[in-house]
Length: 133
Image (cartoon, rainbow, N blue to C red):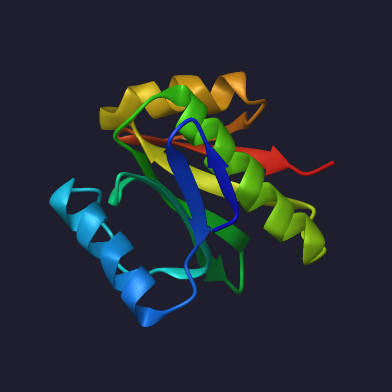
C-alpha cells in the first residue's frame, strides 16, 4: 500500500493478480481495457477497487496514460493522479498524455481542474497533456 486516506487505500500494481483485478474492474465498468502496463495505480475501499490509472507506452508518442477510470469522486482521481505523477517524475518523465472519452465527461472536468491541458479533441474523446514540475 502506498497511501491510506479516509478509508481508501492506494496501491501500485505489482503482481499479475493486481493487474488481473484492475483489468476485471475496467471490464466490469466497460472502460475499454486492452492492456495494462507499469505504472498502474489503483484505489480500493473495503477490498473493492473504485478507481485506477494505468499506462500504455508508445515508442512514437511517449507515455500514454490510461485508462483512467473512477467510480467514486474527484478526490480519488486527484490522489491517483498525484501518485501516478510521483512515480513518473521519479523515473525522469517530464510529461505524458491521457485519452478520456466524452462519455466520461466527469473525468474530463476533474482533470481540467488538475491542470491537465487540452491537447486535441476527436468526435468521441479528448487528449490531455500533463506536464510534470
